[in-house]
Length: 398
Ligand code: COA
Image 1 (spheres, rainbow, N blue to C red):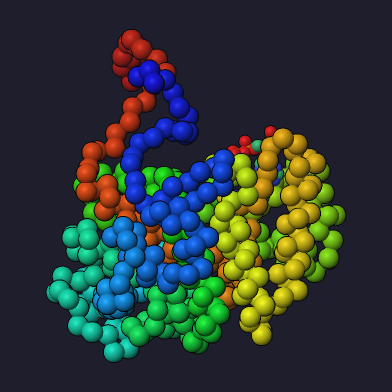
Image 2 (cartoon, protein in one colour; image 1 turned 180 degrees about the vertical axis):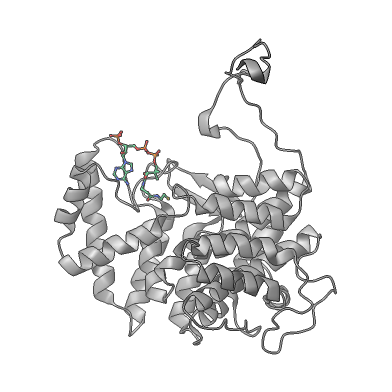
């Protein structure tokens, strides 16, 4: 590539080597640390996936127990974080992603006086959950994210936060902190499958943001807070909420085709379809569709009719997109069945993007550690297209 060649959006520019995930947009293949996503997502606990990303291999049973305990002991968040989340919850202008961004940024505050979980063990060190060691801080951030999101949600709903429970798995603990109730096995499995499916996805915008900040040898809280900011954008993590709204509309009217034609005739985009990298169906859509089908069939309270209506909607949408946008290969993306599955397991629509953050923080932190392992400051160039050789005019002459 010539030194002045411009690649808008860095499209197709390789700027890092990674062992964490491989995305093949033509073949529709996603590998996480070498495992096809179809194998990993429905079978692993989220802790196993996190361990895999951090260590490059699956844990033994003893290693997994140890890792689970370490994570569980870092779930509590500083009182000052709760105060800030309370302020965010009372301000209608702040979304869950704003709350997560602000909450993440406060995790470097000392937690000696923080909220202890029921029966929480003594911390392994006295410097609080996040304090400068990237390896330890990366675990603390992953552990604390569900607590931040759930505390915001409880406060927003006019209830007090539920303390984390160290004996529960990561996903089950998140659901319990949201609702105050123990989730069913099917709900925990459904959420874990989702968290695994979206934990990492190549050098997407938020992961690149995290790596860029880490490459300055800044701290992990800064890197992850920046990544949350990138994920908040509607072009990145914002689609599953609108997908659910659309599905609920159509579920009521029963007329998917009429609804879709109206949108397409008006030149609108159909949320949950199309992708910058995938030219075929996003492999995560298949994983999440299977998981949603299994979940809605297993759960007695699950609404199987809702799943069936979503599946019919998908088929109609793909056919109509081919009719309206021939040759564009607009297929289902990850967000479509994310909405169906998260709705089923009881995650509120307002928290879909923040729950994406609860998963992706596993990938972000692993990328930061990988970057630091063999660091080179990320510092691309710009091509200057502004004026040259201007003469200074004193202010009284302008
Ligand atoms: N519904 C309707 N038309 C769509 C579409 C969708 N979901 N996605 C793309 N198109 C159309 C575009 O309007 C464009 O048509 P045109 O050439 O007639 O103008 C054509 O397909 C190519 O679109 P383009 O914007 O170049 O594709 P992209 O690769 O840059 O966009 C997305 C990728 C994801 C931004 C886009 O598909 C989209 O907006 N999807 C909906 C939002 C969504 O689900 N986001 C989550 C992504 S994981």
